[in-house]
Every structure is written in C-alpha cells, then in structure tokens.
Image (cartoon, rainbow, N blue to C red; front, top):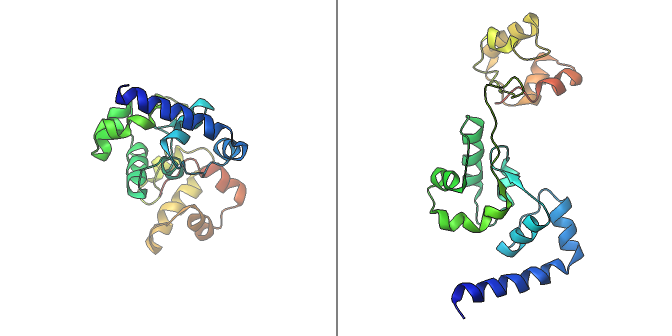
Length: 185
C-alpha cells in the first residue's frame, strides 16, 4: 500500500470517528471562534459546508485554521484590507512566504471569491485619520458638518477606533452603526 493510500484511509477513518461526535459537529457549525484541532477537523468542516472566504476573512476566521499564527492572520487581513485580492492558495502561500504544500490541506475550506473594487456595491473603507473632507462626504450619512468635525477634531490626536471616534464627536449610536462599515483605523 502506497503512503498516500495509507494516509487516505487514516484520514477517512479519522473523519468518520470525528463525525460520530455530535458536540464536535455542533461546535464546527455554530461556533465561529472554534479553532480546528487537526486537518481531519478541517476536512470535516469542509464536508459540512463551512467555508472561509480568503478575501473577506477576519483574524478570527484565519485563526480557526490549524498552524496559522496570529501574525500570519493579521498579515492576510491587512493585505485584504489594503486591496490585495487572493485568487488561489498560491497567493496566500506567497503572502505568507510559505510553500504551497504546507497550506494544501487547508484548501477544502478556503473559498476564493472575486470582488470588484470599482463596483458601487463594494464598500471602500476610509481611514478617518487620513481622509479629506471630500473623501468623508462620499460615505452615506456623512454631511458637510460631520466631515469637517472629523477632520478638525484630529488636532486632538488620531482616532484609535470606532468607539473612540463616537465618544470624541458625541455621535448617536444609530449613526455609528451606519458608519462602522465605511471606516477603518
């Protein structure tokens, strides 16, 4: 029996053993912070329909995958937020400086969707610490008064996060809710 055939039978039997545990199945399907403990769990999650969109994944999504560090997860998220699109596993391997074969077992759970950055449906987050009044005016619900307030209030120092911006400008929660998808810090 060849090594790959033997490994395949081990994986299949391990997959069946894992599937027998309903608590594990429930955690995989319902706990978005559950970190997969093995490649067999990654395979089970893929078989259950769990997917991670490489171009929309957050740090917590990447950390679900065994073998990825917090530094690597942050790198992938920062690249995606900067506009880098991952089209395949090779792109992720190149971004992390890893051989593709090391990431190959994660491929069943990864999804590579294309997002048109020029589409009117794509949200292009703006950093309020760097944006001009004109850039802020492109955000829905931001009027001239608020855009100027955001820019003028930066003299007190940069905004650390959304809640910091909300408190400094005394923004109502419903407006903050509208803005949170359009701002990045």
